[in-house]
Image (cartoon, rainbow, N blue to C red; front, side, top):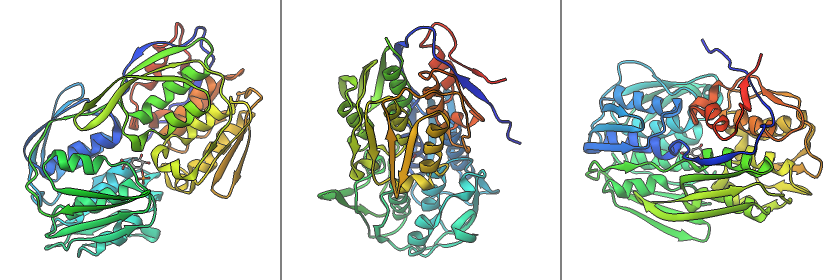
Length: 446
Ligand code: S3P
């Protein structure tokens, strides 16, 4: 039984200040556990995100026969079973709230010759899975799901999986990654074309574990070719801070007058940096220091100070590089002068909630003038948002955190009906934000 956790955010008594590290990157954490389970030998992971989504992946990898050990905060070891070596799980795999875990796992299950069933919470059970099961079926796997391709999903994996060749019609790193994971246990070459480049953590990590992955860029499009049945070797993974989590304290510092915050060791993969580029265009006082490579991924420290922002037009082709950041960008836009238009947000409708509708509702309830025009979100700034509403978060962690950041800067406090889902990606968020101010700004609602 889920117990809702109502929370309320008010203006802090003092500016936000301090040096912080956000939890590990969610995308990289899922992949480190999955690739570790498919490699031969022991993979050591540091900085793993211990949010509920990733813990679901850890549990699934254990259920599939990998040894997954927790040594201490962020420190994990995975003794893998080699490509194709996972075993039939004895029970249903419950992926909780995590679309990434469910979709990537579907790819792994498709090319293992056994039966399995996957389910999730009410949010995940409402999300489309056919975007992965349709192309995966071409390898020889069989899938049975509820109407509309919704979980629970039963999978009969292919005994001798065929390599896939597929053009991904939606910009989705989850779909691309599911197909690559399936292709690991198929002979020959798996070839995937994406019409817009999406986060490439799978490609980077596959190479890190010894697979042959070729990427041809053609403008915004990419063709990714994976040589099947590689001998994946265990490799250590140091997970960088999650840029999608850093977005929340970052925007909070931009909005609360007098603030200055340093966020250390944040992942700066160019395919994840759309929010930073957009905020700089909006006039944010945001600098990157100490840029370096960590386990094949660029990282750096972000230094951010309170800023007066102005509206911008965010082009549609930037969406894949900031797909999870639109709710918090919309909050920032509410404090900017002028009208911000964020284009091409169709994919937001199939996230943990319908984030396009829910983000507009979040702002409108708190006195911001906002419109949805087709797949675009339009936020009219210029008038400081009043706040004062209780926001419905629809089992969506990023909506909850966005609403709470809004409440740090509005005249009246902003409440959320349920902050419990924040633990999926940012455990300790409330303590973390409160640690940046002298008095608690986020508290349990009565
Ligand atoms: C993710 C990809 C994105 C993103 C999600 C994590 C990943 O989803 O929204 O939070 O780790 O591959 P899509 O690729 O479906 O857009």
